[in-house]
Length: 575
Picture 1 (cartoon, rainbow, N blue to C red):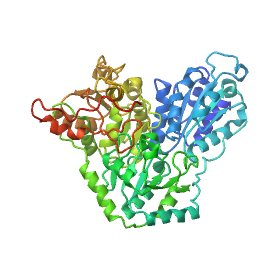
Picture 2 (picture 1 turned 90 degrees about the vertical axis):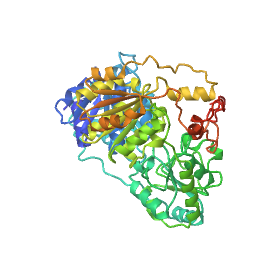
Picture 3 (picture 1 turned 90 degrees about the horizontal axis):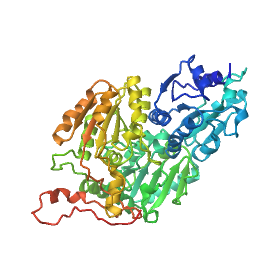
Picture 4 (picture 1 turned 180 degrees about the horizontal axis):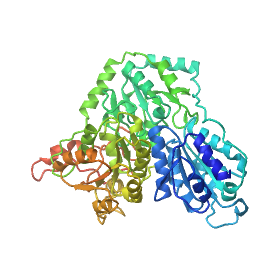
């Protein structure tokens, strides 16, 4: 074999069945070898589409996603998706072509230092110098991507190495599964003491729960103890969204009930979380009276931002099962549930226009438990987090730590390719969809039944909202009123489309979106001035939530000339 053929055989041994990519000169030997492999290659229309599709596969299945690109611009077009995978702990292996070894460092055509560029945003990068090293590198790359805290790994393959002859063989069998280490018994005993003494405990669960395959353990822990629970954006669904004990997402656009509970708790139980600034708000005022029990696989997270009273590193399932108990917290539980009812979202907006939160609440009610929501970044992302009741964290895919617009559509392609029978919906905005709209061609080529729900407010909504609140309503570069006709664009790619602008059109349109065979785009025009509420201003603590929405309905019928109580502040803490 040559090096490229050996590489493909190694991918087969890792049980890789699908890859996403875009060919070019330096990677051409690998594409030639793919022709003789059962691995299915999906041609995306941009390398960023390939890496986000690989992420969609990995996030929805838990397996390692693989993407391929050529040298130079092909490799650099992967960078955003690689950084995104690092921030959200997603296991992917990115394979890039490189100029021949003899030309490295000479500014050759389409040469870039992939090893150097990716070093800060990967778990590991490899530049293969010897063709016989390919089996070891591939095995190590998959092992690193998948085990411990998951993340991206890059393999940079010079063209001469790909063409070199070799007698090396793939390493037999896929990587062995390894459980993380069990928690320290002394720390477990200390954690039990915290739980026994707590009178106002709250579980704060994040994306690490699903990555550790600890969803069922967390649910047992929460249910047995009757613990009020809040989630991060990436943790949504770890406890089902319709569970009574689930108070909602916490943080900047979290619920009042979630943020109030965390602020008042005397024990904060962090499970697979990293105390991200969007979740904590002003860190010094986050859970100010609470002892902290922090469970995570990554020792770098333990004490990084908040010093824990007790830290449990290792297997989350083992830790949660060992700590499951029945504390006496009835009055605290009643207080949290009362706040949940008191501050519940309202959906009876008395307007003819489409109210995005109600549309998403209705979608959640109509979709089945196995529906995947692949969300882009912006106001629609926060509305989905607030109003869609996720039943499992792997059903919710969104770019959290990096906040990459353009994530949703190619991620949905990756999910749909991996799970052909699943219902997969990309919820996007008119700003986000334009970032990778070329991937409609990928949907059409491979006949993928991806559904697209486009919330169109003719603006970069989240940026516009911040400019309204914190920059004296001075709008700068947010107007998208010259958007193209998205329905016509969709139909040009052979994908049927429907447009709606009134609330009474929503039920039939959602039914059509969910039940029309094959792909479909539902274009929903919403109010340009609509904001996401509640909102914690930048620099504030999570009790200082702006929530004028709670007066909106009363103001709608206020006497003529009466001052509106729903008018949001025009000035606030500067970001």
